Length: 304
Length: 266
Image (cartoon, rainbow over the protein chains, first blue to last red):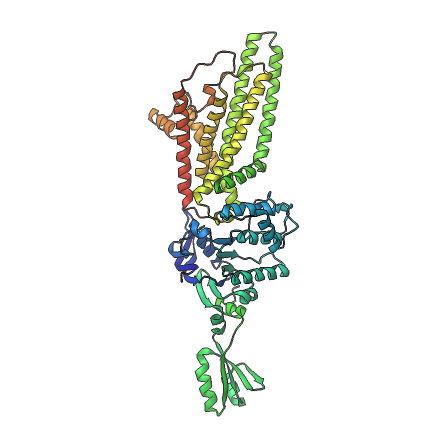
């Protein structure tokens, strides 16, 4: 199956004409997103997320590497016809009203609907902007603008949705609505690629996670693989002598099943052998499932 | 369809552009203020009719040239701003995320600017006629000349500004277009300006820069009761084709430069 999004060895360098200043925004970044997946695109500020999205959308051009979107080069109108895009800080023609802006984007998307007015009213209701039809966008709150931006991304019935910080500016109820929307898009078989700083949200809805740090890819893979591969395992032993406890110097916790030790995966064999040598019985060994926030902070060294 | 929609929204944006509205308001005030000397001169007509008629005709020529020249400024600034403001605000990102090619976007912006200039030309036509009527004169020329020639001239200015703004700040683009237009007039064969330049350079600049003398409707505009010299149709055709060709080349260059332009919110 062709990937919905494919980055292969992408490098992007910003350099002004006649200037020594040189910023390597992306360095040899490679990852793929399969059709139907929800992919969270994570990284601290300045990691290169918006640059990557700019390249994906054909706004920026990489210095090296190749990008394919829906099996087309970025910026190709065949791909763009199937993409819904929400830029970070969505900008708009302020003198228009919400329905007029959506009508403009509907016309630009090339999609034909039988009842455009009903369709646009439905979209506005979906993002909870019904009742504000006559209000100019210049008078919208930040949250309302963000909702309108999401509605315009959906207007062309896209196969791939690219959201740059979709929940920014939204209140908790608004964020919940966006998460529900992403879930419903996933159930409808759409591919969603979105950047966010709110990791518990990403963890709730993502199938795949891509983490960038200072322009380099530091983690990419299925969410469940990333969460269990945090590098720690839980070992439960029937008992633990005090001298061994001091020698191992590990976090220890008493449970109804015995003594629970948290061990770096690299020390797993060593600790189990030490326990056996000391006459302890190992009851269970399980990989520890971290939260995405823990994995993220561990991966980028707390830079976020 | 997409180009038409984008051209329409560009036209509406330009009509709401505060800077354009402000400059236009100031300019209109100047034109209205200049019409008062016309009335004064007209009242003098009884005392020395020949002198007064000559002065009125001269003043009318100055005002019509001003109105026409302001159109060039408006065309250049509108075209530069139409593209630059989209990049500054970031609206271009949402638009170009749609199945719109970059050249289609530029062409739509250009059409939007030309729609604004069409409105301006109609306004200019009305102002010229109203002022001539106030002064008791008559504009003797074909109406189409007063509409088509300025439109072609403004098309050149707009295309040049659009080309330059794909690579630089709109203010620089605007200033360069204005400077190019001014230089072109100075180096034209009829002009006595810039004589310090060698002849070969004057000739080269005349051909390279937007030499608008050829496209000036002033050549055909006679604000007197005299009969207008008949201009053969092929002279009109050659002059307009030259202008449209210039605009087309500038627009193609704009599309070429914009093809690989990195787009991000400024």
